[in-house]
Length: 143
Image 1: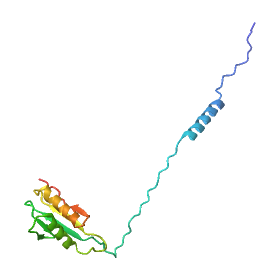
Image 2: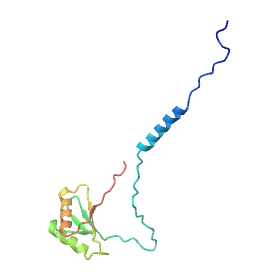
Image 3: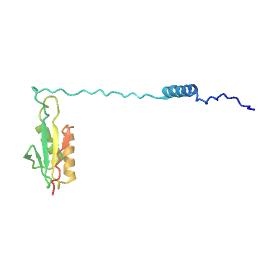
């Protein structure tokens, strides 16, 4: 007596439809919650090359300070060391503004010059009405 039927049982299958549904919901959730960052563009005006026009440089006034505190304006050594005479000398060297630009005062001080001597040059430039000031530097030479 056989109680079992001779039919073969079917093998169980994995149903993929619910898996696909869950993956689609996750995909939609990720697409909605993702933030897209926008990169702002910088507005840059690039210079154009103009070979015919020479570059205009502003007038330069070179003030040198020696280690002993002696000033020279455009290679003319000054006898006085006070700020007012230095300001007068800077005004005379500046003259009328060229191309509408005020001249640039270049301070070239010796390494052994006192700080007060350099501050005096800065104060004289302020008294002379020269607001464009820069310092000449020299890199250390390799030993």
